Image: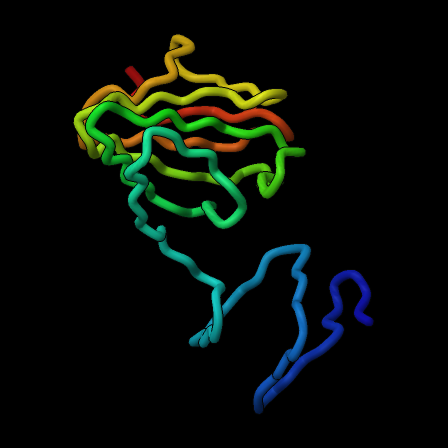
Length: 146
């Protein structure tokens, strides 16, 4: 155990291996290469939603979802207690209006959505809106609202 201003562990040469979770409460400074095995840095996963409705569930975090239905798609953003929907605050899910139909957002029971001028639609085809969870049951829409 280190004290304020003193190092608790220094490894002058060699490797450090951690076989369980590592929790860091403050900043991390990396002065040389970092090799990560597993999922530390992620990219958006692109998926297609061909239906007329979509209800995000856990696992949809960091996704870019192409809505392709010709008559539109309604995305219902859930409250935290909904089954498989306890997203962490700060979760982002991106939706692109890829089909000809309107991309519309709705608040599920107990949830709320804020957006520019309280508009709940994506403005144009081939543009995107991000659903950002900003509170326990609160979502914000950012992007091409209109």
